[in-house]
Amino acid sequence: MGAHGKPRLRSRFWTLPLPDLNPEEWEALCDGCGKCCLNKLEDEETGAVAFTRIACRLFDDATCRCAQYDIRLQFVPECIVLTPESIGEVAYFMPATCAYRLRHEGKPLPDWHPLITGDPDSTHKAGMSMKGRTLPEFEVPEEEWEDHVIEEEF
Ligand code: SF4
Ligand code: SF4
Image: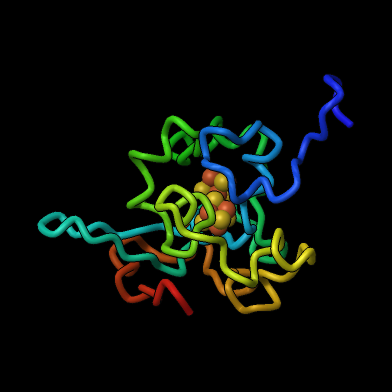
């Protein structure tokens, strides 16, 4: 129970509209896929976004997490901070499987999502995460990133 006598994570909170989620629920919605930590290429003419396997310099490929999440903006000011206010503007820039994007579009979470399975590792087990599949951005020159474009839904 939280400080105000309410459970912090309500039953099936992920079915609620995004603006209704409390901060803990908002954080818990993330599936841990790591795809938002991939460097993207945006086609200037079409606006199409392609994901590459080249990960942000703070991405830990072994854990599939940000190595400095709490202070990441000091190192990576361009990191997108997802909030109920910003999701509308950045949803198009997120992976198609991103839980925030799906819920923003009124779609259900996929059946492999940890909130559905109850298993925190189910995103990895389903092969839907970037764990062990990225290259660090300091190893690949930017002009070669287009050689590393990946399919978004594996
Ligand atoms: S700063 Fe952290 S959360 Fe942001 S893109 Fe990089 S690895 Fe991901
Ligand atoms: S793409 Fe979405 S669900 Fe996946 S790690 Fe990033 S914020 Fe979480």
